[in-house]
Length: 127
Image (cartoon, rainbow, N blue to C red; front, side):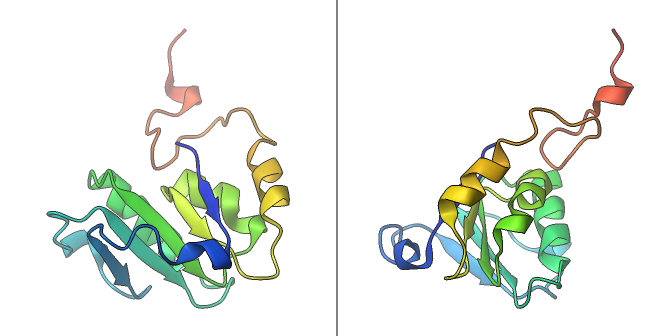
């Protein structure tokens, strides 16, 4: 799954007609009703608060196939971990360089351990 990088000035507008829900980072997503939701916006109130990573991971493991979008204090340094945790889009903080963020996402071609989307880690594969 690739991560779509969105800048602040592109974040508003085009997708207002989809079914989306914004969640605080202390909401228990294990019991969240996912019926009809196309996008879930998860909040990073500050870059050192990683609870939204766990929320995204749980949502993907529950089978949510829609857009999981990161909002708030989102830095390019977090993008790779966001992608591996199940996020499909991220709205960058104003001072972040989207082009550099795209480059960082291509730095690693594969991972040894599993992630939110690829539950089968390479070390567990036979052959």
